[in-house]
Length: 125
Image (tube, rainbow, N blue to C red):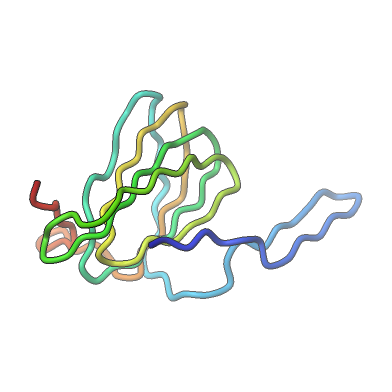
């Protein structure tokens, strides 16, 4: 349902280290998200947009579930993510973020968000 990416290279020397997080995809919008402990974000899906998330700090429980014809189908999948985790959510996947700690992450979108007609949908309960 989602792809968790592994670093594609790592390098360390006396200056510090460098970790390659992603080397694929065409990202058209980049956002920095700051979330307080106890907050909930998301609970939506996209029909056309892939989203990449790079967790910088904190701990977040993410719940994913497939959407077909605007309805949630199948089992919900729970995953806890922390600093350094990178994952991509494809279109048709509802996602909800429960911030277990103050958290910061970077969000990349394959389609820029159109404020007048956003690719942002809520599943029918």
